[in-house]
Image (tube, rainbow, N blue to C red):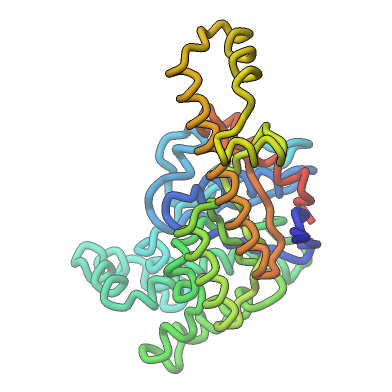
Length: 333
């Protein structure tokens, strides 16, 4: 099957929304994507909307305040800023912007009214969170000097992403007219446009792949713009197709295995040899599963980008390595 491993031309995309099943590394991928987009002297804003301070941990910084803070420098002087979006602070900004009641807003916070409002009306909460991304995209556009070349949002998981982004539907029963509705319409004007692409992160495992395919179907049904499927922690096999076939049937040449073990300074006892053959069979089964899941993803028609499994874990140096891997596959478009 012909699988595209090159990013399409995303030169018009200003908002990159990154989602994925929990545990697939979507925050890591969002951070790497921000670094890749910042190459060439670009200015990128990385938004976090789940309140976990995951971005601060990845970039090895103290917990970030509710302001746009510089967290990394990319190649050629590009800069990545980060903003953990807090729905309460976003609501206070909204109240001041539309109603001029900043002090009154802080009084509402003390009374717990803001937390009550964003909890009882989650659609309003999502409008506020997506609104920050929309505002960052549009900032400076009227004078043809955008504040940021790109905005990357570390968004909620795949199971909630369509509802999170489709804010017009969510607030339909809450606000049919007025500032909140106008604000939602403005947000959707960005999210549904060619300025936005939603990327889904997955592992080559059955459950994450199925949730990714379900998420793609939901996003398509809602008319939301899709970007790429980003396969994280992809494992590369050192065995040839013929060797994998032999490994799968436990028929690798025993003499060659013994020679290899001796060369590595390991005594090729029968238990060691049997354990190695079993491990090779397990490896062949994992490779076959990955290939099968990759084909399922390819059938959705979206470009597939792959990031390697990093044996040493994810630190700042690893983020730059992952950014390079995305660049090698065509980012930024």
